[in-house]
Length: 187
Image (tube, rainbow, N blue to C red; front, side, top):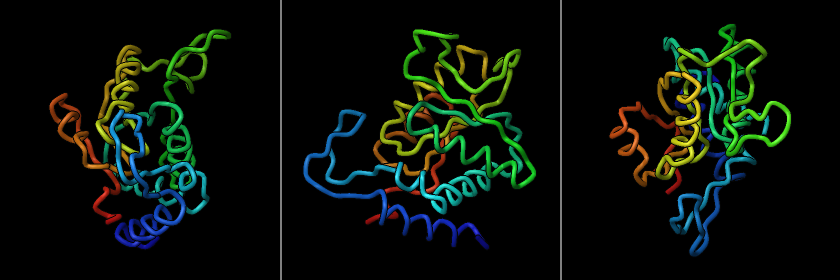
């Protein structure tokens, strides 16, 4: 896409068509109820949607000195993969990891996935990605697990901020937060 505004506008169109719905008393992960809902998986798994999201995230990170992107399964997995793939195509590789909601009970029993044998998160600057943010709870779980492995959290980037407290919660925690889109883009 030629510019960020054009990419954002096109992403809004795709999200409206593939990932936005309205209804009554929709229960959110945060426990809150709403009259609208974002299920970003259809957009994140759409070729154009994935490319736009990854491109906009990488544009947001232009000039930032970060080592990895990561986030909590399941929402952040397609995001981190798209960002890693597009970053390679753009000539500025940015590897990805993801955090399991709970460690596997077999194999290596890891909570953080994506590191090769011998690689570690200690001292690595990580950007936490989230698909839809209400209060920031999912990103906070990822942050706790990443920090426990020694990562330094650079910031949180959400594709859609529902504007229901996440920005204030991250600010209070001293973590920079930004979003590509907000609910204001859909009303």
